[in-house]
Length: 233
Image (cartoon, rainbow, N blue to C red):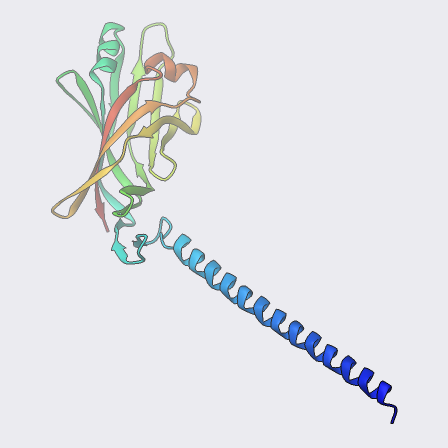
């Protein structure tokens, strides 16, 4: 056998062996990176999915431990009270605006505030301790009318407090499901026997409110405080 040919053949085989080793090493490294990325993505997914949606009852903090949330679904009471500010009450008095409740809602007055109590007819409610946040939508019955000489009467009914969207919608005269108030503030929560009380909510007139709403309410001002007393079925 020609020694020159044998030497060349061995050199080629050795070079091929190095190439195969490098390729195998490269594939192993890529597999490790892929596994690591998959593991990281899974961890991120778990972290992102920690907080449940509006129907959930638990959430997680940054350490992954379970934090119970107070969840009441299928609400059947008690009421939502909207206490209108003394500034708004003074405007209604000075302009001789008549304010009336539409049953079964009721209207009270104390220290210059008008308080509208709306019976809760249903909806859902959740509170998350980890973020001190609330979600859900609370339906009420009854409503309120405001009238002034020379102006059309404003009738607000089917009032729904949407804590998830931070707004209150209602039927305002012939406009159904229209945003009338924006919810501000950080809701707090307490328990009173079998009831749960949500407070610390303030209202501002919605930027999309109709001209008629702006006639009876003051834009760009905090208009009212809301207290919600719920009872789950």
